[in-house]
Structures are given as structure tokens and as C-alpha cells.
Image (cartoon, rainbow over all chains, first blue to last red; front, side):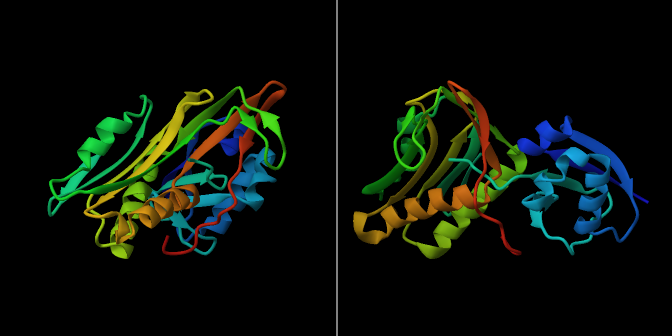
Length: 82
Length: 157
């Protein structure tokens, strides 16, 4: 099992009710697999997951990416800075 | 953060402090600089275009380490596209910001104005709105709502 940290921002943080969590995932878990697991644990995020943007270790990541050990994963809506 | 590569300054930061437009410009002005294009965005109290509404304040937040890394990436992209650009500053203010307050600054300097410096600054703000992880919540007289962007990053971005 790999330990990882998951961070939530903006609408996802509000809906999850937490800023971050530490979890263990099996090796070879993909971003898609992680999204499915988070949605099971936080059903309030189901709608957010349709447009969620994911980063792993501060780089954008995509459904098929493998989540490495000790990863810092962030989940957030499309950005709206400026 | 401020770095200097071959004498060319690049500033990229997320800050909770007031934007010092003059100070930032001074930091990217070299002896050889003769032109600067500065874009700054501010909180708009009255929106007339699209869905007209009033804004009491905006609350900005950022994923700071990734946001600063992506700002550096935007600056690198600007230098690749416009090698004549001398200094670059990309600064986003976060926290609770009221109408008329500058929220973001993108400034590019160059020797002359006809070197692409206007386009470089324009590219910088457009790109910031695509890939730099910052979000804003809009608070109006009748409630609040997160503003959601429309861009989905692609692999390699």
C-alpha cells in the first residue's frame, strides 16, 4: 500500500468539508481509481468530479496516470484566477 | 519569488499584500529597457456585460506552491515565444478583495515597444487564467458563488 495526501480546493473543499486527507492506496492505483474512491467516501463530490482538475506533485495529471507513493494529489475545479 | 537568468529578472508570486505596481515595474526595468506592457486586473463592482450583477467583494484562494510553479512556467513560455522580452513579473493577490482593488499584475519589459511586448503581457494573463491554480468566490448582495473557469489543462501543461 502507498501513503498519499489528497488536497481539496475551492468548491471541492467546501463540499468535502475538509482541506486534506491522508490515505493509503494500492500500488498501481490510477487517477481514475482514486477519483472513484474519493467519490465513494465523499458522495457530496460526485457532481464536482465531472469537471475536476487533478494534479500529482504539482503537475496536472489525467485519468490513466498512476498515483505514486507519497504523492501530493490535489483536486480542484477549473481555475478562475486573474 | 524573484530569479535572474543571464541578467533577465523574472518575478512570480502569490501574495496577500497590496500590489506595488511601481515597485514591481522597477524590479523588471533594466538599463536596456525602453518599453513595458503592464496588465492589471481589478475587482469589478458592477458587471454590465452578460449577466449584469453587483459584486461586494471577491475571495481569492490559491494552491500556492503549484500556482507559483505554473507562473514560472508561463514566464518560461513567454520567453520562448518572445525572446526579446527582458523582465517579466506575474503576481496574483489573494484573500478578500473589494471593488477597484488590483488583483493581478502581468508586466513585460523590452528594449522597444514593437518587439511583441504587448502580446507577451496579453499571453501571460490569458495563460494565467488557464493553468495557474487560483480560484475566486464572488460575494454579492444576494449571496455567494464560486467562479468556475472554462479551461481543462492538457497533458504536458
